[in-house]
Length: 190
Image (cartoon, rainbow, N blue to C red; front, side, top):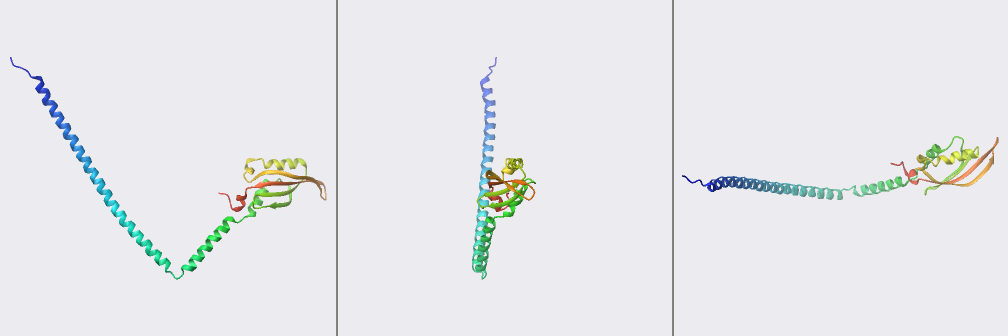
């Protein structure tokens, strides 16, 4: 009878699989190492090119600055630039009262007549409005409660309420103090 050695056969086939796996892992590691070295080399070359471009741009800026400083019209240019900045500041802070009147007209009833308007740049507005009746005054004041008008006008207060004799009838005059959005008269809201 012959003897069968099962342990030897198992050892041989396990060793072959282990060697194959080790070779695959080592090749994969070598490939990753080569890719990493190529990546670092590429970054190094890119860094060198960027450094050279940066140096070229710096030299160009220095040359342009020295040329601008030596320009014979430089003082006039600086003066004009300062004037433009002052003009821009003036225009940005300029109050356009003509923006307020159309907005005020938009919220006014057809039956209302303004007898006096006093507006201040801080947002305070004093109005003297003549209306045919107390009901019309109520309608006029309710307009300022609507959200689309609250954006520009707020804090509406009645200062005085009186009757005024006109040619044909007796009308009611109301004096109001209210606040308007001061940025609205500095230019169109964006």
